[in-house]
Length: 449
Image (cartoon, rainbow, N blue to C red; front, side, top):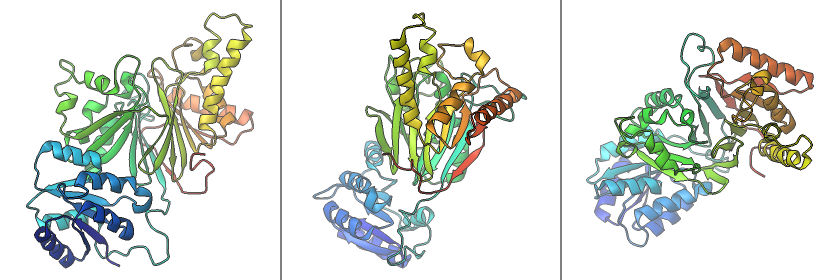
């Protein structure tokens, strides 16, 4: 069965011209002359692509884009191509914000349109789902996790950090058709280069989740090459910090004299959104957030992917450890009980995770000299993972003073702790370039309760 393209435009002559070319190119063509009819046809036929004009009666192109994206549970994610007579940059920006993937200014080259559809969606006569069979949009696919930066505080390139890497925090997650990036440390630069090579002339759409705006978690963004290409769409989500808004903080590091190009001058379509709720979704990926015990406003994220849930706690210090050293009497049981209750909330937040990526900056002896710095030790990270019953632990946010040998020794120490407790937890030190594939299964944590 050939793939369908829905053409929504009130210009009958334009529809006829484009429909003729699409049909000759092997595509099935559906037509509507306004946005309301177009949405009904989309819900009925689930087309692979939707071409829509911006200026239509009853429901304009912006409204149609938003409506289609709001029905992803029924439609999957069809390619939306806006075809319009408006060449205004503001209209293009608004269309992309509404959910469009491409923006073509009329008169449209039908040859270019056919090439765009084939590149994005493959051959028009590729088989669709068999009658009565599963819908490919709903068949779970493996989730992928790749580490691009695993270091904390400051980047540490050099011969002693080759094995585990010297870039600061950045992790790529792909699941349910979404490209999600956790933090924008210096590891974001090599990720950006890899994405440009992979996508070539195709637009890149990704969501960047910022845990907090300490420099080691944002310093890679000015060097993120996809942000300088106007066809790319980058959505940045995070929570407001202690003093200034998220966008202001991201822009400040790019002000003169620190950087030659400001955030506003980046040609890519970049939208910065400050989160208010602790539960939200990135496309088809539900996300939960939790505030962590770290100076300022720092957030951990749990992504419920097709391969199980991934919990990311980049900078966190146990409450009971920190509070016990703050000068309160040792017998202040109320204070200690409160601290333990806060720690228990974190246990419940990550409970049953397929992967736990957690701050493990110090060994036990080092931590005694760094109480109150907002970071964890090997002992505490392993204890958290064991109590929460997670399946695999990655120690993360490696100290800039730790070379490869030290990180390896801490990994072995963590594994020994698991063995002493009789656990079956798998422990690895996060390593730059390492990719983890999470196969779909009926995980207890695959969807939020």
